[in-house]
Length: 229
Image 1 (cartoon, rainbow, N blue to C red):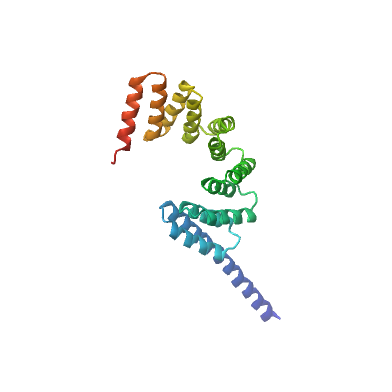
Image 2: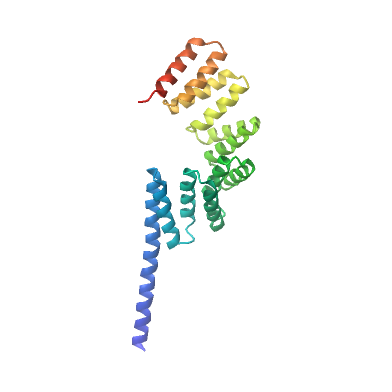
């Protein structure tokens, strides 16, 4: 009887250690895939994340990361499939909703993108990125009132969101509210001094109110930034 119990205990120990190694290996591949993507090595990232998924089929974070790698390569259908799988495994995973919205946006499938961004906001109401992304959909559809509201909300949530300031500046410019446009483009420049587009658009706004010297200074700065280093 003791021999049988000892054998069973040994088996349980082996199974436990195997399970630990199983999870650790998947996590290692996940970390490697994440690091490869950060270096722009998307094919390597996909290979490593696929190994993580093979070892741990319910690894929704790995599906999400692999989807981002596919999206970076412009393979949006594969990206959407991975984000969808991540959502199936964890319906409340905010990142997958936001990222799938990005893939739909890049495919100009605005209704699907809008639905995903809105769901992302429901899951994480403090996500300034999701508000910015949804604002971009509204902007592209020329629904400027809704875009303005989302950009403003994004800025309220994060004062360092240069994209929201930039795009709201474009709306102010379109509405001929040039002083407000200048203020937003100036904020972009403060956050990202090497953004030539911010200088160009602020220059346009200065030109619209006939402050030509300031406009010329901004155009010159933009040209300097656009020159190859």
